[in-house]
Length: 391
Image (cartoon, rainbow, N blue to C red; front, top):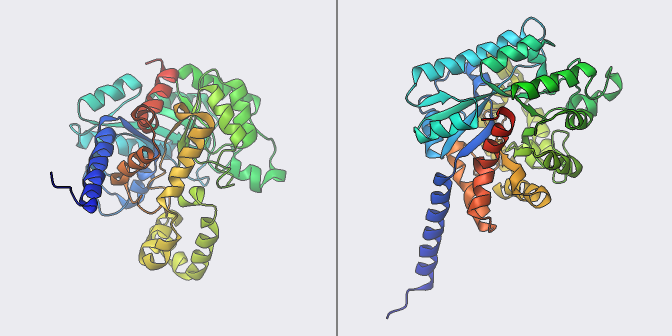
């Protein structure tokens, strides 16, 4: 029998490997715990039910990337306070409800793991709601109840801004001496208990280290970090230290790894600052047009793609964060929380939701089992949802 040339054998092996990775990816239930498209939709009014040429998520590309469920972030900045923040949060939820009403055959709201699995079985995209920032409850328990009734599956206790009852990682790092308290107050502990009673997951991606440990000492349910990376690989205040990761695992919780270049790559922030400085005048002009600094920055990066593209870290660095955390605390405690549509830069090869299969392929290269890949892609989230809601 005639032997095949080596290059042909290699190509056949690579083709077989790629098919295997895609098959595993398509069989798994893929859940992303953090996307900010609803915040942007308030400004640009895109219809993500249809294929879009900008942003990272729409229902068409979600299907192409094997994304089965998305937790949509409900967010507003600290300029919204009492009397405005809760109202703005509901506007974003209204926009998700409107999307579901326009495309009832494509997308449905789910509140627990049983409903999520049913949506997948019915070939519908499962939409969940995560509220990113405790300032949106405006210090009111009844606002927590209202958001829960509308579908809130997790509450990020703070954004970068602290609340009267919990301090944030950003302000602990940069405004430490001016804070009136550190960690959870007694009212903050009451809020944790109330979230536990309602079955709402507590998200510790933005709160301070003190708040983090105060929550773990208070909660009776497993908690999450919906979009964070490993501090050991990049000492950013938004990333979790090894001791925090181990404490999270002991609690039974899960960290969902963030794709943002600034959290993945320790060298990115310096490059990004220099880039903005070079184009400060144009960025200021774009902010006036878009009325939003994040959208203006996204546009600036697109205009100067030849400059911004080399700033992106390699995909291997993102995979390194996933692998580092798995090796530290186990595959039962790691998931995907991309932060797509919420940042100006992601690793090379992670351009939008169609690129999720690359993660599966890279984990296979590291000899991850299909069982562990299933956990990371969505199984761990389903477990967390059931542990908190009971369903």
